[in-house]
Amino acid sequence: MRNDRKKDLTFTNRVSSRKVSKGKLYGIGIGPGDPKLLTLKAKEALEEADIIFAPKGSDEGVSVARRIIEQVIEGKKTYVELTFPMTKDKAVLKRYWKKAAQRIAGEIKKGKQAAFVTLGDPFIYSTYIYLLKMLKQNFPKIDVETIPGISAFNAAASRAGFSLLEGKEKMAVLPVGEDLAGIEEALNDFDTVVLMKVGAKLQKVIHLLKQKGLTKNAVLISRVGHPNEKIIRNIASIKDKELGYLSVILVKK
Image (cartoon, rainbow, N blue to C red; front, side, top):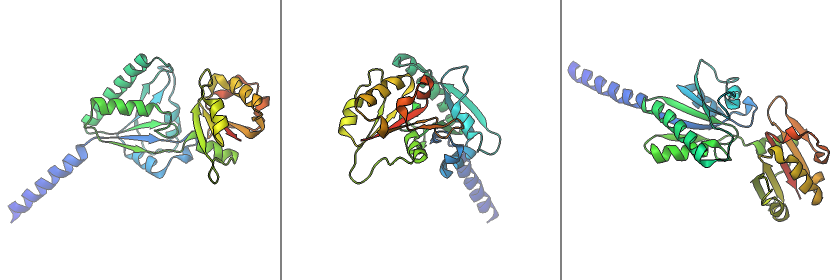
């Protein structure tokens, strides 16, 4: 009987060991900036992670996402900052996505619980989308779970007291390109228009809204959730070109 018990315990320990050693990646949306907007599920996954990967725009820069979660995550953590340059050259970006995927996959294959953090929600204009595609393509057996986060435009609407949708209204969410492609059509066809990735095109957007008589129907929220957050309702008066960065413009017909 004792020998049987020993065999059972040995088998149980082997099974437990297997479960512990199986690595996994959590793709985690951490919201737009306020660390208090981190969901309970996101916080739990981050605190259980062995290693946390955080994106940044250049080798010299500091990860904004890392700075946000460091304010609320308890215990000492191993952080790895991955560079994803601010370029539209897909060939260059692909090299960085591939390199990042290999780095993450290497840790997961060691049995590590890994997390990749991203601002806002992981599936709204996020680097995580391309990273995940690369992982699925090159490392299809890796276990991945995505945890949603509060998007910048949801947080912006709450901060500005701006109703996004009522009744049967329709909404469009668009990134702002150099030529403002699709924005005028969206303003014509939708009740609410959310403009993201405004950046240096801010004055072009304001000019278009003036032409359509919509400046009084719009609000700009800059760096929502950050200490230097700004909410500007009279957007026709904006002169500061830098306000377009990390900004969202909400427009209602």
